[in-house]
Image 1 (tube, rainbow, N blue to C red):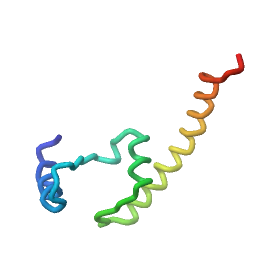
Image 2 (tube, helix red, strand yellow; image 1 turned 90 degrees about the vertical axis):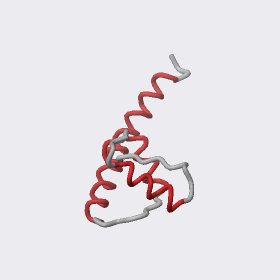
Image 3 (cartoon, rainbow, N blue to C red; image 1 turned 180 degrees about the vertical axis):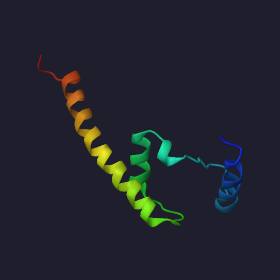
Image 4 (cartoon, rainbow, N blue to C red; image 1 turned 90 degrees about the horizontal axis):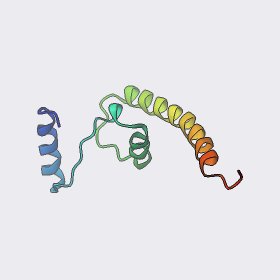
Length: 82
């Protein structure tokens, strides 16, 4: 955790009245985590909707390409046909 993030986590734990808070820098997170977060889509604040939309569109496009590759890879690896 970066020192500057502590203030954000503190505000979140106070607002939610819970210590069960994870703060993730989404644009540097692994692709599967980005997709999981986008699927849940519990948006708290949106100060820059155009930037958010661009991020979401780019992430979904990359994930679609990745999912096709992953499906082929898993099929080859775990296929019952030799």
